[in-house]
Structure formats: structure tokens, C-alpha cells
Image (cartoon, rainbow, N blue to C red; front, side, top):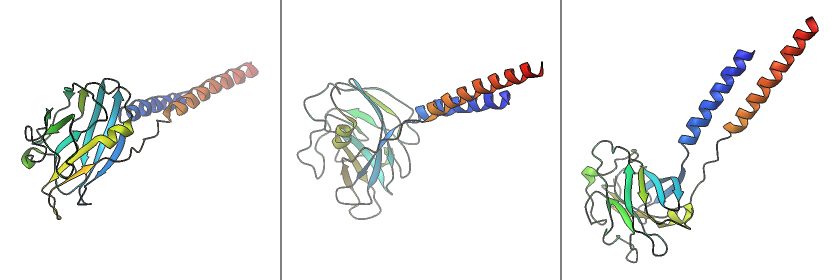
Length: 210
């Protein structure tokens, strides 16, 4: 019995580690003109000086730009790190991204582009393919006072090579859908309590036999 409880405890600890590592709050972004242009912004973490995120392309086209028009005067921003970009993906940080198609009032604070200085253009050969998830990008800068919903409201995603008309589009903003915090800590506590109870019960039975 003790061995079984130990195995349960180990399994619970594994759930804690992996569920915490995978935690990210998704934001669905839909094209302004083409409802088939969809992507998910995955907000992995947000602090006063750092934003960590990735993007999953759920459209049939290519994502060629990811930009943010943040509220207020913030910055400066820099790309602190990114995980390996798979396939032909080649996004680079740009601080002067030009205009945003269909959103003439937008002024991007920073963007990850496949074509330097041109959010309106982009290189599909270096973009995020359909069904793929980008690298995890860590951007450093002044994010103080911002909420995840404000980050979600600030995002612009550029789509190209869509299979339905129009074949290029830009999606803007979305609603954060918080992922519930892992309940594994509750399971861990239950497992520990069960183990302690089993040990006590076994000791009592041993004393009775004596």
C-alpha cells in the first residue's frame, strides 16, 4: 500500500511540473475582413519588464507579422531571447514597422516581422505555416501596469496567402481565456495526507498484533 501511495505521489509531482510549464493564456485573433484568418496569441507570462508569448497559426494561410500597439508611451523594447524557430520561420524584432493595413491609426511599439520594416508586406516563405506554432519570444521593455487583456487588445497579426478572399488580412485584438491554475497541488496534498494516514493505520495494526 505504501508503495502504491508513493507511486501516486510521484505521478502527482510530475503533473505539477508539466502542467505549470505548459501554462499559457490563449487569445483568439480573427481577421478584420476574412473570418478564416485566425490565430492564437499564447501569453505565457507578463511582468513589469518582460512579455513572453508565442503564436499558433490556425488559418489556412501564412502568418508573416506579429505586432503590438500598446497603450501609453512605453519602451524601449528588445528581444531578450527566443526558442529555436522551426522550419523556414525567420521572424526578427522591428521597432519601426510601418503602417498596419486596414488600421491606419495603429502605431506599433514593436513587431516580429519576416520583412524588415514592413508590416504591410512580409515574406510568406519565412512565415508561420498553417497549423504551426512560433518560437517562444521573450521581449524586454516597460510593460509596467499592463494587464494580459491590454496585451490582447494591442496585438496585430498579419496573414498572407489565405485560401479564401481576401487572400491577405490583419487580425486585431481578442479576449484572454485564462487557463485554470493546475489543481495538482491539491492532489499532492491529498496524496501526502493519504500516505500519512496509511502509515499510522499500519502502525496501529502492528501494535494490536503485539
